[in-house]
Length: 212
Image (cartoon, rainbow, N blue to C red):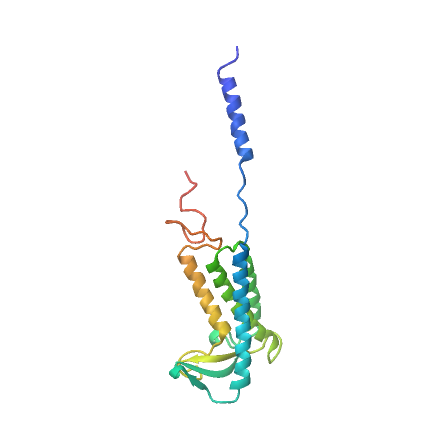
């Protein structure tokens, strides 16, 4: 006589095994074409605007007194900056192109899962700012990798009296970083989803899920 346990156990195990075999694997997140287009357009726009404004500044503001506009809110005055954004680290010119390459690699890695328009704008601003100043490092005097960045905008007073002199690339880079931080804090992910309540920004599940 066949035991009661035998026939019952066989089919149950077979069904369970079948369910596991046919369970579809999670599809990898791919960049959305629209997000990548926004990302590329923002970066290109920043670089183009940065190059154009630097050209105008060098052409029309070299060897002349600072130009006061907007009632003194903004002064235009060309300086050659060997440091980073806002004239930080003026003695480490050679280091900044290397940092720029690392940042570009980081942004490219992040863009592999880019499906959010807000993240596309943020990363485009950062990438455009990095490339804008990197171009000066590579192609301006005094030489390759040690070129001085053209800065020309100063708030509230000339000669960086109240605010460091900056350019379009500096402003774009800072705005992009601030936007990235805000997106992380509000739980907005690069793939277009949002972190639910109790989920740490940047993680895929709420704390404690999956542990019995």
